[in-house]
Length: 442
Ligand code: AMP
Ligand code: ZN
Ligand code: ZN
Image (tube, rainbow, N blue to C red; front, side, top):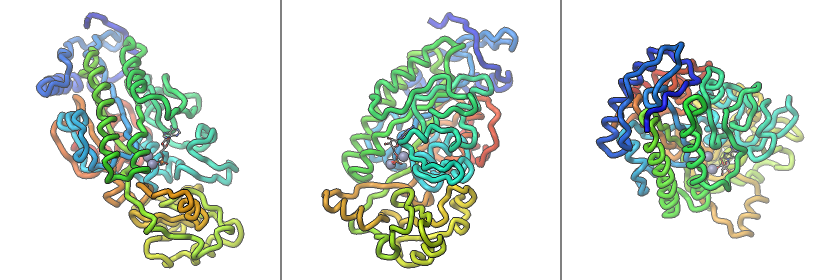
């Protein structure tokens, strides 16, 4: 089975490869002990000379599979029946939480994970935004979301491709964007109806490609836990059932990988973009109680309101809302606390309101619509990332990672440099620090 010697497309340093081989042996031995290395033998001893670029599949360069389980709050790992994720965690490293950037929303947070940049530096300052220079509105579900003018920084798939590796994306915010002619070699237009099992099969298909065509960095994305978190809330039985369903997909992925000769090279980095907080119709701040909402362009949705003046000034809006409701904190752009890293980008609205944990901020009209339709408020996110409820999931399992270790909550901007290190890539400038993930590595 493992006879093919194939050329690799990758020119990596020999030192990082040697270090990897030692680690891979150790990891595979221990992984086999817990029944998850699929009987794949340890890496062979052939280290190719850079000129020949020939190696056996099992002795080759590291592979990273980055999986996002959107909206997976940190505590679901212990509350739900998720044996496959727990096995990966116990074979590797988990953190007590993964701290998103502000706002703790899907697009900004996912893009921070793959760039190592805070939203004020990567430009995706929320799921919805205005750019006066571009003269358009960005919405994550609109075609504008694929326009490269909105996306700064260098996502890891671009770093990989630029340095001679192959990247593949089974969905990720930004993966459809053309970065100056660079894209993942394999990618698909986002389609949330594309079945989860097919997402897994697609990734396994890429991993079965011959060495010169096989990606070393793969992203995967699943939205189910976020959707059910919004509809049924983070404390519901539905959320636990949905988490268990996704755990089965992770099981199919791991089992599939374990049938391949490259299994001992695979590093799983399993994350979520944010947590989830229970909201309620009893906890609503109605903006119309303080301002004439017709005079304000409200961009972004609860629990964050970004406000651009239509008439009057930003200062009028700020003064009208400041300290008016105990569960709504209002800032001028320049005054947003430094810990939130949300001041410098011109797309950040001049006035920002942030609801307290579990609260909703909205207009009278929207509240009336919700009440007329009998809509209950389930879960939401976007709140201050320092809140425990906003912390997500982080598991890292693979030969370069430590085993059975739990680390304190970690900011997700550090993962870009961490994954670049695993892959032997030179990271682009970013806000993360490699030392922050030192506890993850062997
Ligand atoms: P949020 O409103 O922050 O909860 O966003 C979650 C939603 O983002 C999911 O239900 C997906 O439909 C959507 N989404 C996730 N990834 C993408 C993508 N790459 N392109 C477009 N929409 C996406
Ligand atoms: Zn999300
Ligand atoms: Zn969501």
